Length: 428
View (cartoon, one colour):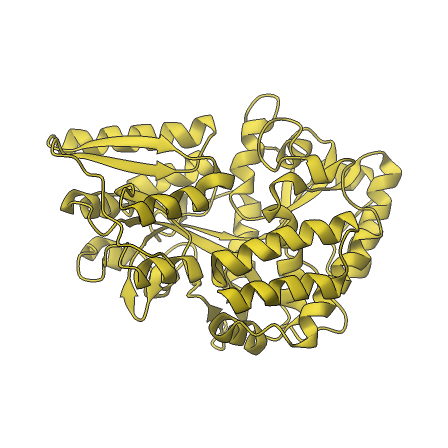
């Protein structure tokens, strides 16, 4: 692991095996007098929902006085619904936590429970201190991490072979060549679920990671300054890539994860060569294959190098998903979070979601080459950033998500993209 590693918004390095693999009102918990905890999670697929049902049932069996009401909230609606619930004082007791500026706003508003002194010794032993940083603010921990989810390209090795692509692209020129080759073979080169906006924004985030230095990215996280030329260059680079027509037909009206016609479904059914997405994608793809099993030829490679940028070579982007307790949640909420961190539950999480767990004991069960590649790139990265819409908070993040769709549709220019983001930052 590189010793010069830098982290934006607390993302952490992991090692497999024996090493480290603004709200306006105080939010309360909804734990009822009968001991019921409400849990909000965003898995809509069978294995993911089965995991939460089984995990809740096992916890209830060991804790007869506690009941867990597992509720599914669609991923695209999650942040807005959660913020509304927090601000109204009717928050779920346990909820998915993405960290960054979103967590900072919850902490500032007193809406989330401080876990610093109640994390179990077992969790502290099996999960690296740096990983807890993804859910920390000012040295205090507010989230129990469950999975590390760096982004990159998920691709079909069979489709790459059929198109004559012998090596994963390492530069934008090579990615452009792969796009041309895949087109020639009769499939969509790149699947994109632009209907949901955030997958389109991921493209801009990665171009910004290549265009902007880590200092500029970090500065923007504190002072919301987007005046550096690198922000416009990133939008220009994305516009140039858009002009090669790499995406599936109708990408602006394609969903990301819902059904066989979604971007993940296009990869799952060998109708598109690749998709830029976080490390939860293998599980989503698996749920959309004809037999609902993992894609047998799935591979992964990091976002390519981009000429002329100030970003550090090998820098990577992605979050560490965790779970938080609302400020008024009962003590049983903390007990449940510590349970989520145990090796057996973490291994079950990995098997259900096909995503790398944070528990170092559970990481020993990870055998898929593509997940090994993800973690290797993540460990070797000199700089790691969480997703920029998470880092910069809801106002700026939403502006990025909307503006990037305008850019990809041809309704906006690179400068207009940055102007929209800057305007949102000034209101934040």
